[in-house]
Image (cartoon, rainbow over all chains, first blue to last red; front, side):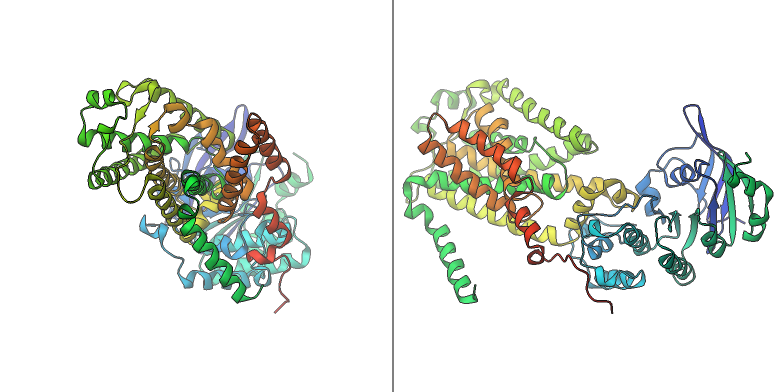
Length: 247
Length: 343
């Protein structure tokens, strides 16, 4: 059976530095999958390879059965595979509602649609999503004036606005206060359950990832170290060693 | 300010604008150029202000539009060699109908050619970012000027004379005043529509974070190309008419006037506030009036005064007049600084 995202033997090195080696992961449709590993273990490199920032040296990456290796970033995004960034990236000079309004799906956007007025449904949907992530009362503020945590939420809402099939989240809770983290976990689960968006999440916060993911992959030194259900990963000696520095 | 007063002011200003060339007949050309300046600043701001692509090459479309219009006007009624020998003599005068027809046809061909040019050039250089794009477009303007001064068919370095304006009940100054007024107004309305809808959001997104826009699947290249083509369209229409207003096309000083018009359009947009709709209009008006005053009262020192003005603009108004006002009173521009109360 084929999965929504299939990475097979992906390898990527920058000069002499091997960032990824023989990595194979599967993301089945409708699930939440976790990706963990110590700093510098190649998680973000893998994300960048998947969304097309740089080509992989060997191996294959398939999304809905289609090979992604030679597609460019916007083409992959239009297929319904989106990512959020570790350092938030939002449109700082525009307000929150505008940030969402320009994030609508662009699959099959015609030339004429570029000049058309924004339909009222889009504005409504934007406000609903801002309410969903808890930014409704800040909706007219410039995105650049929001705090880091709020920008993360905004970026998440922008991704949801695009209705992706698969969303790659790079540390969604990094730099966010503990109270807000619970809210984020709930919203990620809701997005998965109600909007049917499959999630692949990089996370350092073990409490978050154990709560969230159904299946976890652990990377270390650019290689796949372990995989399994959260409980298995938690008790895997190799994973514990990797995090505590036995490697 | 109450509404009646606002209305009276608006109507008064409107009448002044409409009647200006009749009230001040000696300044007709300068008044026409005022609207040209407004148009130049507005079209530059599409790229430089709203999209964050600082272009020094927009003057290329101005010049290409000017030459195309003149060449079409010449080609419709004259033989190239004979026309050159006339050197702008009275024999080059056309009847009003012929003149308007040839001007219209020339402007249309110039506009079309410039749109095609914008798409072709855009495919080549709109992939460049930041300073690299600015430097590259600077090169475009210089190259275009050099090509025009070496091309005999266009009169090379000795320039090209446009057909004389026909003798009729209105003169050249009045005709082109209203032409530029209408053109500037049309471009303003078109841009106001574009900026308030999806197109405006998309090019603002490119300005704020182009990588993010790409990773969200936005057709960034298409938006950038369209933005440049819109610029090119209005610049071609302006250039074609400006050649006829001045009556003589010099490749370096009139058509591809990089150091003057080419830089001024950037300055005017910055002075008024780039990235705002009214900024370029205000900036162009202030700049043009100041510049004319320098010429009149500081003759001999006008370039120095202009240089000082430029320094003052860049140092004290880096965000422009409207940008500064917006920083002081953001609420007036639909921005909020405080969030609303929790619901």
